[in-house]
Image 1 (cartoon, rainbow, N blue to C red):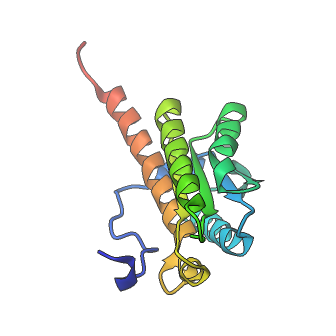
Image 2 (image 1 turned 45 degrees about the vertical axis):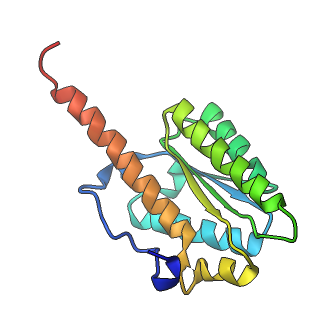
Length: 174
């Protein structure tokens, strides 16, 4: 369904008990480029995590110059802090050239690769709008706030990891 038809910031599915986030260490990497958008996403992300029970002292928030640096910032957090998840927040607005496509593709690939290789959820909270109005609409406007969506995704992935660990403890046999 097109985002033009709904506000995407309230999760349609809550996956059981979300208590694992109360003890989780979560990193947030925010691009400074388009900071009116990205900082609104960051603030909403932090508010959502705290509402879910995450302590501010268990969050590490850093800034990087632009979206292209998000995977590097996430890698630095994962390498230097014990993180249960890292949320990457950025905004790449389409321009007159294909530059946005190259940046968006590289960032998406970098975040996905880091997540798979580290075994930790690295969340893609990067807007790729056609113009500034679309960015505003998705950073607290009529389509919600991508920062909230990214926080909800991190919460669900942290809980999934916790649930899987519990399955291991209940395992019988080999």
